[in-house]
Length: 308
Image (cartoon, rainbow, N blue to C red; front, side):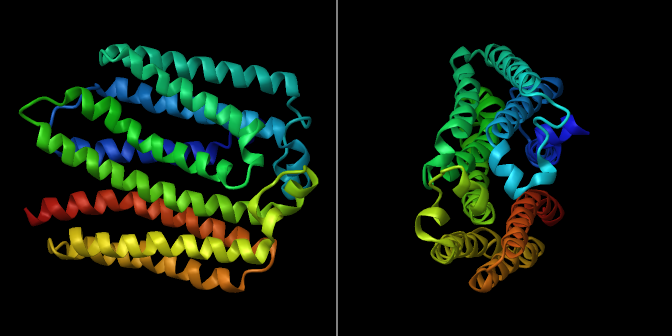
């Protein structure tokens, strides 16, 4: 169990679920030829998971002091897993993840795409060692990496299979993935800010310069509220343009109930949030919004299929 806590397996399962969902509940339901076979796509998911797991390991190594204050029950380095062993696990996960990325890049005859996996591993390392201490930049990088885990599906499974005959259809599918990646980026960016508020005590003792440390919890909460209004308005406009105007009633109701309503709840509740428990609750709400937002791809696919 200590090794599962080290790699934060719940987050990895959610990441794998998201990538499998996009392929088998969306892309596979379209009349298109994809670049990767099922087992090769499985390797793409595995590579993403391994690199993310390595990121969690290195983050746990550098976060021992702050986690001891913020989340003492989650500390595993020095409690059953030595720092040396954690570093060995980190290097093993990274090397394997990047190696799989090199293989897949050659499978689709785009060897240069292997740099994407090196970039992910590098960003996760620099985030843990440097970037997370820089106000908002660390939040931005984490949110960007989650968005990239959606975009990478299009890069490896759609783009290499695109030709003159199917270019318009493939571009449309890639565009939908970009829309979801943007949604994931915005929600996760806000969530990272809320988590900074939640972890302010431990981060302060570590000398970090997160937003709540720099300007205070109250002002940071108001900024998070302001950021939350952006995806709320954009989602409302998106729902109207693509769901309401195309008579996708079930998708519209789903989006209002499981995306817009929770977002509105977050906006209202963060006004009065004060304690660490309050912000932990709001962080969980954003995580559920992200999950239900991703699940909407299944609802969209089924609604279109039954309306056809």
